[in-house]
Length: 444
Ligand SMILES: Cc1cc2nc3c(=O)[nH]c(=O)nc-3n(C[C@H](O)[C@H](O)[C@H](O)COP(=O)(O)OP(=O)(O)OC[C@H]3O[C@@H](n4cnc5c(N)ncnc54)[C@H](O)[C@@H]3O)c2cc1C
Image 1 (spheres, rainbow, N blue to C red):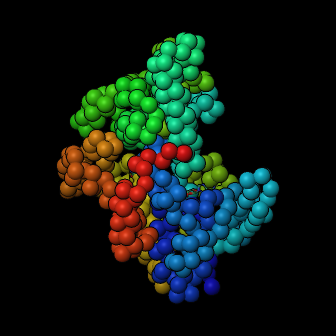
Image 2 (image 1 turned 120 degrees about the vertical axis):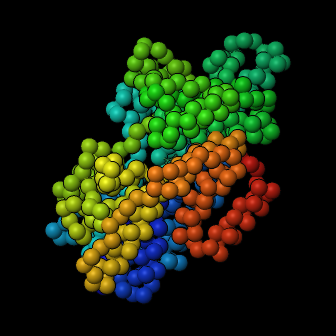
Image 3 (image 1 turned 135 degrees about the vertical axis):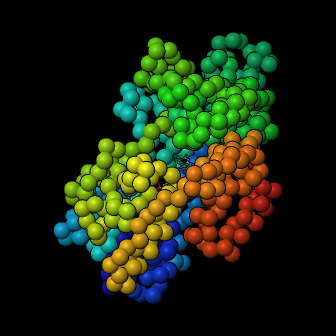
């Protein structure tokens, strides 16, 4: 039986494994194996909600092992370190336990068809001090680290305020700078914008959970963007509308501001300025892990994306496919397919169809064409806005409830592809029940 190996169980990889598990795995036509360095999958566009505690990652995460069992594929935990294309295997590094001991030794997994879907991460452009002092929002672990630090800051802040009220001496009241919780976010793309708004929502909830008198003016969020406007991928009118909404909430938006260095409690700007902050997030740029350079000579671009043909096969090896953020494909208009959730899931569909076609002995594979359905940004409970594509060259700007519905539908479609309609219906129902049962914010 042939082996289909998929590396990376994210937005694209997990949908693909589920599809191929049903089409080929369950029918014993192929052995489908999904490899991921983690044990669970979480829809990455929700990470800003995990970071503020609005979403509990443990409730929403999908266990790879359980999902594999239910959908006809196998799961291997491990991180890919190398590919041998001549002998057709991928090499995984050992899996280490919490004490640093080796739990699973390094392994070689053979493949007939290999799909690489290892996603992307933020790009700090080697800016001094960023890796040491800023938190990235590329994984649930990083989002949880942010959430814990945020809760600590708010607790310190509310304790200081309580001390101030009972007249304690002033030296004890200097734990938080400038009597505000200062959070700086670098990167005015969707992640930075959505996180900024979500923080104000979190602050509102915290005051009802014993965190003292936290009002929105106790929170200072600074959103920094090197370009001249927020959300450069969206039309200018939407960028302007988003900026206005954020500023109304209290976000300090700094465009055309380049960060040159990060230290423990501040960011230095190219024009000599300093932005003080208790907590700093780096949510700018996109790059792929340098591991793609160990993929036996497969062509990569400047940010280590794997170059693919329109069939999603890598340019130098027809038995190796790449999808999602880690794939580089130029569209007809000369622009690359953007690293977005909708592109990853569309690629998963075409890649799945092409692999099934190869199993059926077809030689003609389907070309991938990205259908941009538009972009929406959620400003938490406050509003949602963006544009949806209505025709080949036309789009419609939407805001409010309709936009919120379209925004959520991207995630619901992903869930439906993983679990089917019935289970998604149950997930939605349980989500609604949880609103009564659970606190509106994760508080630990
Ligand atoms: C905070 C945030 C908000 C976003 N919001 C939006 C949005 O609103 N709309 C939108 O369209 N897009 C959004 N995106 C982008 C979107 O999440 C990505 O484009 C999408 O997840 C890419 O899917 P993927 O399958 O390529 O990779 P991912 O979903 O990133 O999955 C990659 C998988 O590979 C695994 N992996 C990585 N390296 C290795 C390795 N060496 N070995 C084994 N496994 C590995 C990871 O554990 C992960 O499971 C957002 C991204 C972030 C970070």
